[in-house]
Image (cartoon, rainbow, N blue to C red; front, side, top):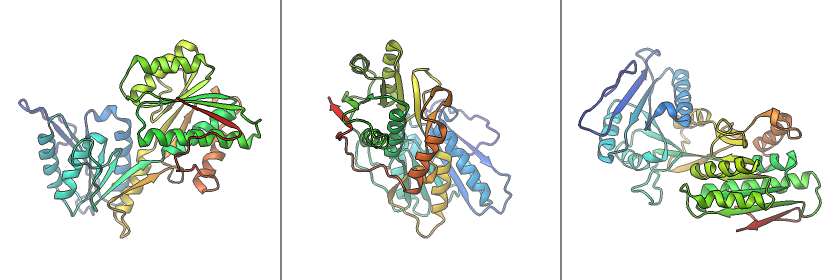
Length: 354
């Protein structure tokens, strides 16, 4: 099943395909063999590319071997069969990247108790929509969306924006974390700058659907027409609809969950995760007696696993030094982004919930 030198192997009558690559420069006395499993197009998946870098760096540091596999999830049974074969190749740890592998990992963790699993961007589930079921040999990595939202909200107000918006689809845990962090950052900056009471307004809107819809663009246009200068948008399709609205009104967007500055000049800031750093830290924990299997861990500023992506030439007030100061305070614990999902306003900030 393992293919070296990126030679493709096609199965004519099967929807599923698998490719694996070996990092074999460490010699035959390797201590560990680490697998990374992704689905779909690896080359077009930034998180997967970062995660693979982290796997390779860690394997090299441990005099180990890193193996990369791509599994097609178009046929669930075929994917499960492929993963069973991967697990038979002697991997002692496996990193799964992407929520489309949640059900596959659920089965893999049950059938391979001697392997420690890490999941980036998801949690193992017995079926789609079911509650997570994380085995004691599995650690799920969750990025701190609240801190990312906080950095974005703080930066926007510091830069001088006083009428902001937030648009998401469903009220998912991730969306609420981004919003609560965003509003906490807005409030913190308004207090730090000693603005007048009610100086900042945040308009919030949930479309109740994560799909691409004209209603999303309409909601964004309404916010811009009602005075919003910049909107934080969350959701792959939501982001793109809000960006189109911003382009029509010559306004700005903060893309939560992904950095879309390269797609449009309307995107002032983007949120990003450093999957390489997260994977290295998680793999290190696999070798520890205190391995936190059966849980999800939140990696944020203190782990150098998140960042607010900015182009310095587009800012006049919120400088790179200001960003590093706030990030450093979050990292050290001197400043905290509350995890209480509080989206209410305060004396400085009015929050309009729609």
